[in-house]
Image (cartoon, rainbow, N blue to C red; front, side, top):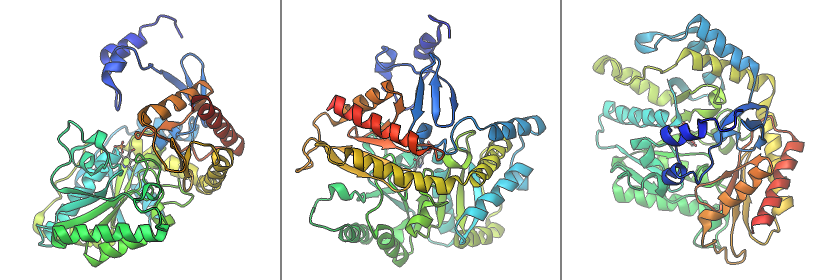
Length: 455
Ligand code: PLP
């Protein structure tokens, strides 16, 4: 690395960063971190500092960094055939093979996969397909979509609206009118603390049904939810939640979209989160874990029930007017094929399950009785640590938005990357599936030291 090289200046002058405080970054108050290499669970910056990445990038590098099998597959595909489109029945060996591999892994009642590039565009596709489906069925008024407060479904116009986090609406004139938000299954902060998990799940379902009845079930097309709330603070559902919600949706003929961008392909120790919680979705959103982020690729997996209607509608409506130039991009598809093969060969789904149990138990052992511990929660290889000012009353810190960025900053100085979730008082962990017990011990140890140092 050259000292005084211009990268930092170029960055500040030219680069509009995602999810960044623009003014602070322009003033140089937030660091420019230039990541230059990675292997396994470790990333390295250009100054040679090593970090254990306990959030797998943005919970996406599931197989870990630096696998030559995936890099070689990408290079071979680029040399052989860098691009061809998927319009009007075209495909490539890579994209067709990947569609088969996805459907072999998807729940039995699913039928086809439509490829996109990001979780956001896959969810946009899902909503369009839901509207198209209801129009074919002759019920044009059944269009509203219900999502949860604290849900995250992307940053597009519709997906930013579905996202139930204020930050993603503020000053963007979102949410759009077709979106309704319902209560988050956030048991820790339930209003009635006397409720059991099952009672709280039943309460969420009752609230949902009341909303549906207020709006009129014939105006509600679908409900979208992540099996585990991710960006909303790593919140697994309370016991019985998905069964209670599914019963309400089935009763009112409302489709279920399982947004499995984070949970798809093994993060919970099962291939899909739907499997883990017994959900029966009509659409499944996949992205991150499909290629472990070696190349951008996403998908909308469509159920038999929806596919039949879409296919029948084609003779009357002609080709479906929905396509991306890069849908099923062969280089990304080649990365997907190599990634899914690697997940099988290295038995990474089972490892994610085992290491997830270890991580959550180790975090509870180390930090469970800390005076500022609100809750340590997680399923599979997802763990959220929520801090409070007062354990008895669950009173939040006044400057909640400052606490976790500071703790996470202190952790980075000790060589571990975790994520300060947008709420400010929750630290998120979602490491690559190949993480070992010894590496988890380091993550837990550094978390404990940083919390003790800051609080
Ligand atoms: N859905 C979920 C559950 C996500 O966590 C994310 C991103 O974190 C998205 C959708 C959006 O994916 P992308 O950032 O690839 O558009």
